[in-house]
Structure formats: C-alpha cells, structure tokens
Length: 510
Image (tube, rainbow, N blue to C red):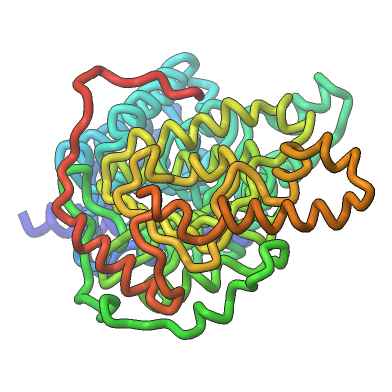
C-alpha cells in the first residue's frame, strides 16, 4: 500500500509539473502556465483539482496525456468559493477534444449547482481537428452552459493566449472578458482565411488582439499588459460580486458615507455647460475611496460604467463623460451601458446614474448604425431593472437622452439634481431658434431679440427647480452633499422588492 501511495504521489507530481521543455516554450512566449495562473488567481492552498487523471480516448500508439490540456477544479478568492478551468497550452496546444470539453462541462455544472462564480482561463489552439465533430460538440456544450448560467452565477473569461474560431463565442457569452497583452488573440476567422477571402494581409494582433477588442469592438471588458496584474483584478472583481443571483454582494464595513461632505464636488464641474470635465473625478468623490473598477475603459468612452462601493456596499455606476464627445450618447455608448445595467439588475446590484448629457449624437452615420435600436437597448434595460436606482443630474440633461439616462419616467426610484441643472427638450438657444424662427427672421435686430428670448425661455423652463416643482426631481441638493444623499437614498432602498409582470421574457431590441 505504501508503494502504491508513493507511486501515486510521483505520478501526480509529474502531471502537475508538466513537461519541462513545453513549460520552457510557454515561458519563452511570455506566458505563464495554467497552474501558475491559478496560483495567482486563487487563495494560497485553496485549489482542489477535479479530473487530474482524465485522459483522451485513443489507440495504443496515440498520445494520451493526463488532464487532456485543461486544469479544472475549485478554489477560493478572498475566502469565497469559485470554480475554475485553465486551458494548458503545453499539452496539445490546449486544443479542445471530447475529454477536454467534458472536464469543462463538469466544472461548469458544479459551479451552477453550487451557486458560485466561474472563471475560465483561455489559452488554446482551438478545436482538436483529429477528433472531428466531437470537438465541435464539446464547444456547443460549453456555449449551452454559458447561456444556462447567464444571470444566475457571474461568469468571467480571461484570454491569455489564442482563442479562435468557435471558441471565441464562450468569452462573448460571459459577463466579463479580460485580455492580456500581445499574447491574447480572439477572432472567428484567422489571418490566413481573411487573406484568402479579401486579399488583405493582417496580423493576429490587428485582427483580434487585446487593443482591438478593448477599443474598437468592445468585446474585451478589460485589457492588461501582463498576466499577474490581470489576475489580481479578476480577484478584485470577484470580491465585488455576489456568488449568485439569489445572494447579496459581499459588503465591507460602512465607510461613513451618510455624513461625508465632499467640497471638491463644488469645484470639479464648470458652470458653463459647454466646458468639459472628467466625470471620473465626480465618481471618485461619490464612491468609497479607491473602490471604482471601470469597465470598457477604452471603448465608447463617452459613457462610463464602473463597479464600486458606497458605504461598503457594491453599486454599479453609469455616468456620461464630457471629456469624450461632450458626453453624448451614441450607438456604442448605449449598447455598453445597456449591457452593464442588465448585468447589475440580474445580480441585484443597485444602480447610480450620473447625468450630464447633451443628447444623442446626430448624423447620418449614427442613424445608419442603428442608434435608435441601440438607444432602445439602454431604455429597455433601465425600464426593466428592479434594483434600487438613484439618478443624479449633475449639469444638463436634454431631449431623449434625459429620458434614457434613468429618469423618473422610466422607473428611477430617486432623482436628485444639482442647483445648476438644465433639464429640457433642448438647450435654450436651440429651442428659441425653432420656436421663434419667423419672429427672428423678421426682427430688425435678431441677435438682441434672440438673447431676450433665450433669457425668457431659460427663466421659465430650464431653471433648476422647474423639474422639481413638477415632481420629476425629488430634491435639488448641494453638490458637496452628493455622496451623503446617494448613500442615504441607497440605504432607504435597500429592502426594495422586485416586482413586475409575470412573463417568460421580453423581446430586447438586440
């Protein structure tokens, strides 16, 4: 028996260590091994492997490596249970065959059954061609489970190397996608196919690199230069999220937000509605210090989406960004914010919306890009959300964009506004040009008349208390008290019950 135990220990050690030459090649590519990644991701000593001895089927002359190129199991992040799989590029290039897929299916099923987050580390050459259709069936099983788990447990994908062809759909189906440096590649058809079809030669990075997906396609939620920093932020993200849709997100001790005036808020935002400023500075003053984690920082930068804490509780923050396109909403920004709102609602995370929006981006390009359809996604997401929702109108809110940015009319629970806010169909100058077009054309001094009419329109319809007088804003607050009032509002709404019509599901304008 002792000999058997010693033999088992030796075999286990060989499997875990991997083939030295293959490990060396992985390091030469600037990549960590699957087990090195898990060691960074998980609390020390918490990983329990499942399927260590699993091997692919095959004849006596075919290679049948243990683990079949994927490490699966469960561990802890800050003491909380998570399930993981990490593709091992040192074994058959991490390619997916039947046994490989079965291991991933198994750990996904366990994550859903246990109600715990799932983290997948992707580094694979794709489907194992020699296994034929069974490899494709394996991918299908992963996608099916991604969808079944959607909105039930948080799902996080980390792309550390190639993830091409059908494999690319799994990260696209999960809640968050991290991509690491030049090694990460995510695309449906590779450079050779693109060249054969279009005649254009492109590199892997140009086609589906981290920078492309972080700034142009919006597929990557986060982009990093190195794996260690990436995996540390995966740990932080998990610390903000609930284990599943039936449990609250883990809270930290209250940070005294309900008595925390922030004088800086009186200085950050210019009175002139045409002058830009960085909405991130406002967010940093409203949320607990150092807790904001911005999503899609490089894509659709005219809207900010971030997870953070207020008084120790996890919140989702959506804010217009005047530093980019003056904070207007366009097709990409609406889509970005809509997906974030729906994620927060699915997992019971309250929403704080900071509004400074001049409208939707006009132009034929946007109309042809489907800005109506994409804007409807954000409108739908807010209308459908049942979590606590607090809106703060920081400076201006014009037209349909005001409605879409979680106004009272689409279900915001609490609407606050700063004293200088402007809520209207459009700016006073534009409104006067439309309403008084004929009078201005006939006036001997049209500029003087225009100035008088703009002043009158502003005084009657755009003054800070107009919306409050009509019950569309609940309170006009001193900017320095924004953190206090938002924290109090969220505390008031903490026991809000979910309600809505009974139906299978609505039809999102996808």
